[in-house]
Length: 455
Image 1 (tube, rainbow, N blue to C red):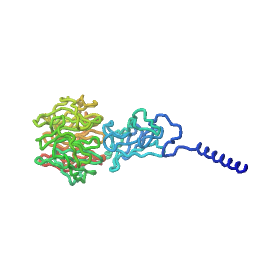
Image 2: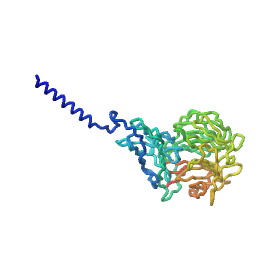
Image 3: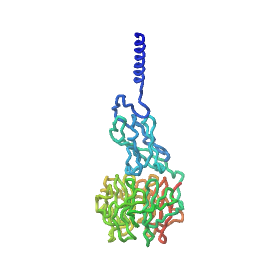
Image 4: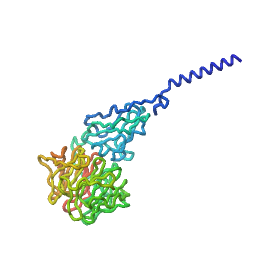
């Protein structure tokens, strides 16, 4: 009996020793931090990013990686799925006014996260010849519920130019779309959208989209959508937005419509605080939409500035901006500034104004030097290849010349497509590092074509 007890005791001792040894050698699995180990209370930081700050000539097809000092819970590392800066890790070319949608992956250590421009439904490239910045917010949290101490924002890297060997204009041979004049063009979720327009007698009801500039699909707009031209549109908060416009200068509106898919439209406001108008501008700046200028039902031109974060509640920044009352001007965001260029205040204009203040309350006129674009209205503005562009317009007679600038002061004549010497009421958009010009009026015909500027 005593022998049996001794054997059992020995076996029990061996079992306990093995368990103790196994426990002491245990390490956290590759999928997550061990819940039995001592909590790591160090604050996570960003240790490196790639491409590194200051890197130039980065390929537009490159991925971006961010490395943290410790493992981060993957569910707390998200990226923007639309142009809105909504992710905990964000990629932007305009100071996080808008963001580049990206897909995020991570390695087994959960320290290195990689961003690839695009989404589950659309592949994208980085923006050519442009500085990109990466931000990690304090919503990045590790396995012990410890967050970054403060937002991290990189100084940025710069991509290579796609036009190094030259870019030229060509006809995209567009099919399935009508634009005419007074339409709006918006880039949203990997596609260009053409919204409304008209031909001088009819006002168009259609909304079209294209992922290549050639084949266009009718979105079959429904819901609260109504035909209009000379309205303004933009992309914001994952939606398309349309505001104002009318029917060839009459029955002007001050409504606000939005849509996530271009098909079903909802009235956000049937009568916004600003006066009904057309030939105004609409853009996104500092995570708000801004509406600028235009002309009202009494043919009075305006230089008021309004902002909103939801399309419903509007704030009037000023009813008399420093730039003169005008309509048919071009406006865009470039170099973390709002730009207003040209237009008509009774005479065509060639002035250039910008605002870098948080609420666009203060404006400065750019001091242009050398040869610059002629006074005009009905032109379009774009940001392409790291430059500010002014294209087309009515300068006494329609024109289709293109000008670019790195600072809004010194301008270079980029030229126009051969055989294309006139065009006003034209609109532009940038998609997949290609600049597109759509529609317009030549003085004798309303156009539905698409011109592309590319290598």
